[in-house]
Length: 259
Image (cartoon, rainbow, N blue to C red; front, side, top):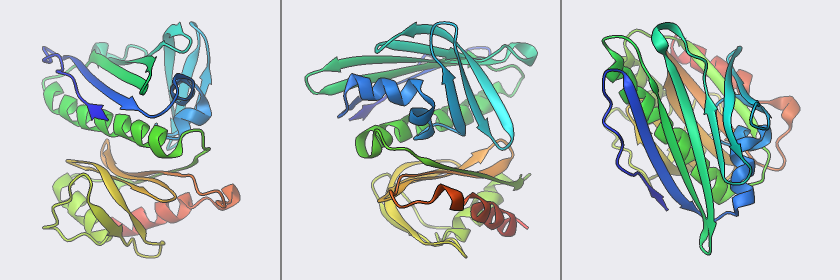
C-alpha cells in the first residue's frame, strides 16, 4: 500500500518531499534493496555500488556518468541517508530512508530534500518530484514482485530534444500509443516498439514525461532525463543472458525514433 504524506511547501529553492508505503517484505529485504548494489540495481537509476557504513558512499553510473553520494547516516536495518556534494549555486539533494518492521510486513519511508538554485527552480522541482515518485513506486513494485532477484540493467538515452511536448508524442507514438490515449495507473497496456519484442503489462506510474509498467519479466520505464528521452528497464527473467543485453537495441530504437 502506497501513500504520500503532506510535503513541505518549497521555498526559495529549498524543497522536501515525503513518501511512504507498507510493503509485503521483511525489514532485511527492504534494507538490502536500499543499501546494496544489487538491491539498488533492481529499481534505482544506473549500475550501483555501495561502500556501506557511516562514512561510505553510493555510486550510480548511467550514460557514462557516475553520480556519487556520501552516506551521512547509517543505522543498520533502520535508517540510511545519502547526500550529494554541493554544486554550483548551492545545489544538492539528499535521500533519507527509514525502515520499520511490523506484523503486516515493513513500513518504508523516504524523505527527499535539497536546494535548487536559479529563478526557474520551481519548474525543475516539479520535474524532480515526478521522477522521485516514479523511483519510489518502482522500489515498491520491486519489493512486491521481484524482491531478492538480480536485475539486468537496461539504461539507454536518446538525443537531446528542445521541444519535449512533441518529443513525448513521438516517443509514445513509437510505443504504439495514440496521442489521445489516456493511460492511467492500473491500466493493462501493450507496447509495440518497432524492431523489439512487444511488452505487455500493468501501468504503475504515469506523469508528465513518465510512463512505467510492470510486465511478467520486469519493470519498464520511459522517462525524460534532462533534455533526453531515456529507457530505464529492469529485467528479472531467469533465462536472460547478460551477454546479450538488449541495451544496444533500445539505444538504436531511440536514435531511429528521434532521427
